[in-house]
Image 1 (cartoon, rainbow, N blue to C red):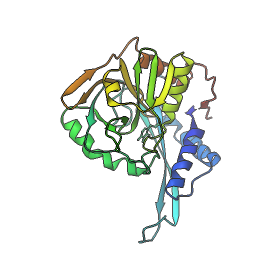
Image 2: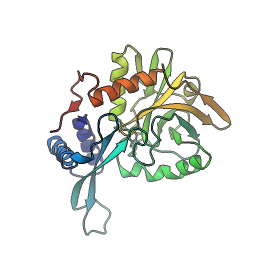
Image 3: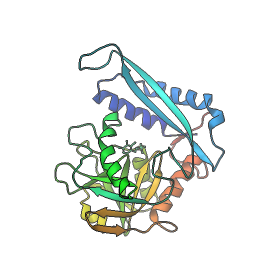
Length: 272
Ligand SMILES: *Cc1c(COP(=O)(O)O)cnc(C)c1O
């Protein structure tokens, strides 16, 4: 079963436009993903044991030296089985809660830049901050906005949410500095369905430091609780595990993805 393939196709289209790349149509994209999954059927882990992580990418090539769009493009789709406890190699390990470091100097994205599209330009710039944080024992980095340095934006490759009482908040996609995650969008809908108040807005760092819970979302990590955040010399801990709101959202999302819960939204697509 595929999860939200059309949403991912639309996002590739949007990103490709920003990078002046031609992109496959939604139909071509979904068909290519289906064919890849069918051809790799024997690598799909049994129910409850993991999933087949599918990563489509669009790549330019050709014999040119000038600075400009490439003359030819390839749609390449990787597929790899991932276990429940170790999604995608170096990704945040399974459901263990994250110990985040707030980066004060290096920035991830700038208004008008490409932080809001799923492009290679988002990854290499975060490795240095990530490497430094990991050397100090943190699991990943949380970035602040590059204009004021006061508001939280996202984690290296995952969106962030905070929860306080019955209100869940996530940074708004206003300046093109935050990646519009498909998981982010799905979690916002699930949160509303479960009766929480859901807000998309500017979130000052102080609010994160005073939240009851914090978690991040992404295709590979689904919903991953944040156990602690360190800013400068201040360390704050959050509720994680049984009975938390992030656990409830995780159960609901993965329930729909695996067919354990009825998909009333048409988010899943059967492949056979
Ligand atoms: C992929 C990605 C996300 C998560 O997006 P999903 O569609 O939920 O996988 C968030 N932030 C960045 C920078 C990403 O590259």
